[in-house]
Image (tube, rainbow, N blue to C red; front, top):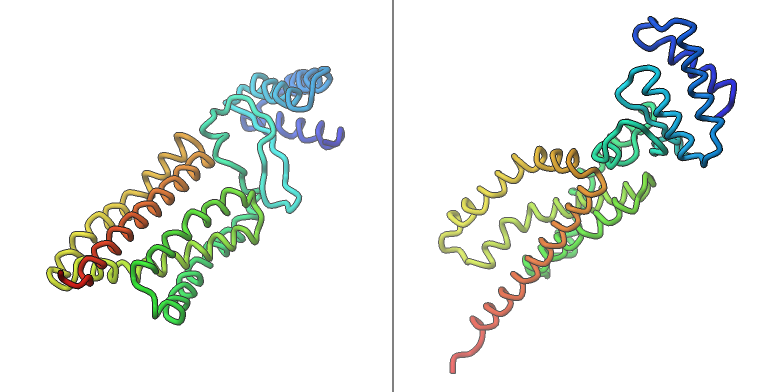
Length: 258
């Protein structure tokens, strides 16, 4: 922080607070409290925490937070704060001045490209594979994709890779969603089986966004991602167990009678 910019910014802050109703004497008092915090013989993090506390107390605010702008000037990383809860601080980096907004929208739009690409791969390379095998691959991609998201830390190409993998997985899953029940249960009662499966899918699609938002608000953004990763691994385990059962039942049907 430059001294001139820091003092100027603090002066503008105290003059702008409460609609500009703070007097010059009060501003000087605020600057003195902030200066005392800066002159304390402590490390940088504790210094900023003391400064945040001084700003909150002097300006009668609810909270104050210091963030560090990333090298690509896209994200603001938390450094120190006063008055903010763990749930808020656990949400991860914040977009800086809206610069990441357009990029985030563009990356999210690649999900459709991923879905199209996944279906093309399934058409050209999955024609000789069983529906269950394709389902195992599509669901197995989810956990590595989420792991990429956890490790991305704002890295553009890792986020692009995550989005494309997620889209490809979902694109293929929409295809095998109808093929796997046919392979498992046959043609008899196929329509009823699809209807039975569709009900929980619709319920999940309806309530999962609100539920995930609640999880993020309760435990923080990173912990919510860990929860998603755990769910994807449980889903992969379930499809693997189902595949083993399917292969065993198929072997019994095709075995010659004794």
